[in-house]
Amino acid sequence: MNFIKLLGYTLLIGGFIGMALVVSPRGGVIKAMCFQQLVDMPQQEQLNRGDVLAALERVARMAWNKAQTPMVMPLVMLVGGLLLGFEARRKRSCEVPPEGANISAI
Image (cartoon, rainbow, N blue to C red; front, side):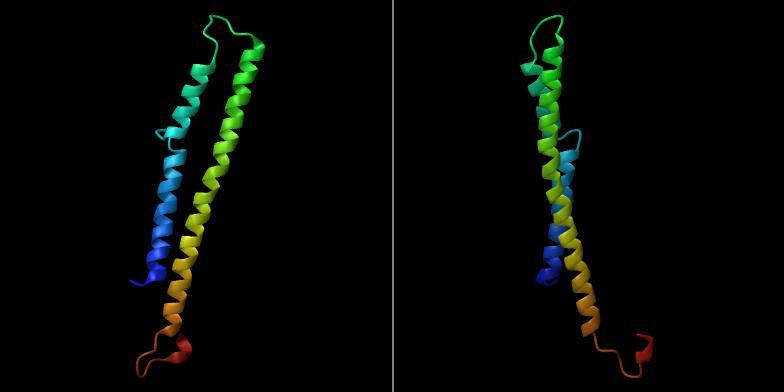
């Protein structure tokens, strides 16, 4: 296995694992966001509108910041897939047809 093919598969698999860890419901990002909001909420029976809106704003801000990070992983996967495609195309163009093969069909 050559280096380009190995790099392509590594980027493809690594990007998938990285994306799965970030967006998985069992992942630490969602649990951390929820736990932080539980800790920050005032411990009283009734909450006023300002406290609820502030909590929603914090959740939205945290989600926005975390949502931008997973965009790196699909790009890593894209680069891995492109490397594999280019390598397959290069390998196909370098192959010598066998004796007596119909070259016009290639």
